[in-house]
Image 1 (cartoon, rainbow, N blue to C red):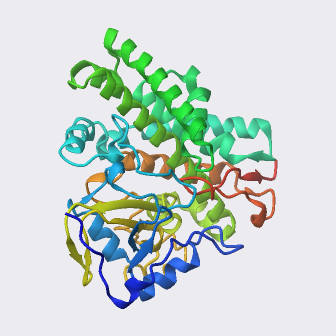
Image 2 (cartoon, rainbow, N blue to C red):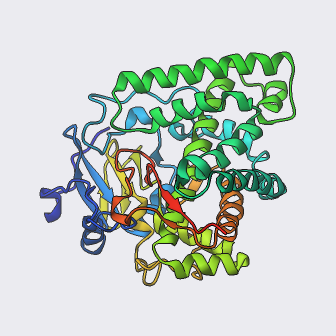
Length: 408
C-alpha cells in the first residue's frame, strides 16, 4: 500500500540531486552534497520523472539503507535520479544482472560465485596480475613518453584479468571493451546502448555453448559444468561479470593515478614504500568513489532518522557524499595515504557489496606501485584542468590521462 509522503517542513521543498562539480576540483563530489549532508542527511528529493522520494548523504544513513533488506534493488521499482534518463517505469534487470535482484534470487546467484572470488583465491592471482602489469609497462617503455595511460595501462590490465578469470579469449578483447564502454556511457542514445547490450549477450551465448560442450578451468567453465544455471542465466551472468570487471577497476587505476600525480609527494611515497599500497588503495577508493550513486526503493514503510520512508518511495544514495562524511572520516576532503579507511563504501555494503572487490584490490595494489617504480618521473602531459572527466558515465573518472616521463 502506498502512503502519503512525510510532511515535515523541509519535505515541502524537495531538493534535486546535485551533480555539478566545482571547476578545478576533479576529485571532489558536487559541493551541494556536503551542504545537504550537514543540514539534511536524509532529504526529500524531486526526481526527473516527477516522483518525490529521498536523497541520503550521511554515512550512517547510507550504510544503514544498503544493509537493510526492506529496501529493494529491483530496477522496475526504482525511479531514475538523473535528468535525461529513461522515460516511464524502468524495465526489470536483464537475466543474470545481480545488481537489480533481491533475495532469494540474488542469494542463489551469489552463492554460486562467492567461493570463486574469495580473498585467498584473488591473492593467488597476484603473480599473474604482476606479469600482466609488467608486460604493459614494458610496452609503455617501448612506445616512449607522451601516451594515454587509460588506453595503454589502466584499461587493459583489469580487462585481461577478468577475461582470463571468466575464460574469454584474448582475441575478443576489443569487441568487449567497445560494448562495455557503450553500455556504461550515460549520454549514448538508448538504441546504441541497447545494441551494445545485445551484442554482448550474443557473444556470451556462443561462449556459453562452447563451455557446455567442453568445460574449461575458469569461472564460466566451472559454472557451465555444475551450477545448475540455464543457458540464459549463465549467458546473462557472464555478461554482467565481464562488463563490471572491465570498467570500474580501470577507472580506479586511471583516476587514482591522476590523484597521485597532482601531488608528487604522494606518488613518491607510494613508489618508495610499496608496503603502503594496501592502505593507499582503500583511501583512494574512499576519496574518489568512482561509483558515486545508487538507488534503493522501500518495500514497506520504514522509520529512519526520524522520518518515514513510505513503501514505493525511491532513495538515492550518494556514496561519494557518505565517503566524505566528517562524522565518519576526519578531514575527509584530504587524500591521506596513511589513513585507515576501513569501512568506506567505495565497494558498497550489504548483500550487493562488490563481488569482485578482492580482485580489484589485488589489481590496484600491484599495478599502482609498479607504475611509479618503473617511471619515477611520471607526470601529467597536459595541465590538470585539461584532463577530460567522465561526467557522462555511470562510473566516474577520466576519459584519457596523457602522461610523460623522462627517458634515460
